[in-house]
Image (tube, rainbow, N blue to C red):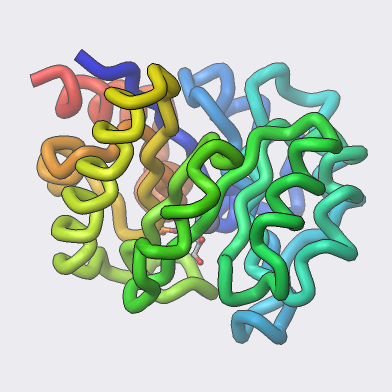
Amino acid sequence: NPTYRIAPSILSADFSRLGEEVRNVAAAGADWIHFDVMDNHYVPNLTMGPVICEAIRPHVTIPIDVHLMVRPVDRIAPDFAKAGANSITFHPEASDHIDRTLSLIRDHGCETGLVFNPATTLDYMDHVMDKIDIVLIMSVNPGFGGQSFIPEALNKLRQARAKLDAYKERTGRHIKLEVDGGVKIDNIAEIAAAGADTFVAGSAIFGHPNYAQIIGEMRSRLAT
Ligand code: DX5
Ligand code: ZN
């Protein structure tokens, strides 16, 4: 049985009380804090920079998973490492030199990951597997919380799972398979069956009045 992680996306949190929100969701059993960085350039929305990451860092001990939806990547990635990020993922189309960006993130002490938009081919990972700790499959087009899960993402997850299993067979190294967008109580079991082990959920968790209850319910769906 795989180890599952639930990563609430604070994009749907109350930004006016972010410290309290991350403490509450961590106390409610979150495994990671998912931190969405948007630049109004690579995606049509604007969110949080390194200073916000640094500000929430003292409020939780669980890992902060930074999802960069920015272009260029290399200029800003090290600043998130310095601000306390534990993992930094980016979109391969947004980097001019993917292998170099992965090395840059590793050199700053963070786990690395590539993020695949709904129409982005998984081929981007093939020649850099040794430099990746996380593969993140987008199940919505990036830019906004609260969108519906794109069903084709299930096929994509199965294909990614096959690649990661073959890699593990060959090397013994486990790469996490994360999914982001439209994850809810009603589809999380099906998404896990397609191979995901790490689940980002924004509106489903922060839109619920009781974080412990919704996270607990997600875990129970994963257990069955
Ligand atoms: C979308 C972000 C997601 C978003 C998910 O670009 O990457 O992390 O917050 O929100 P929900 O879970 O509401 O789809
Ligand atoms: Zn995200």
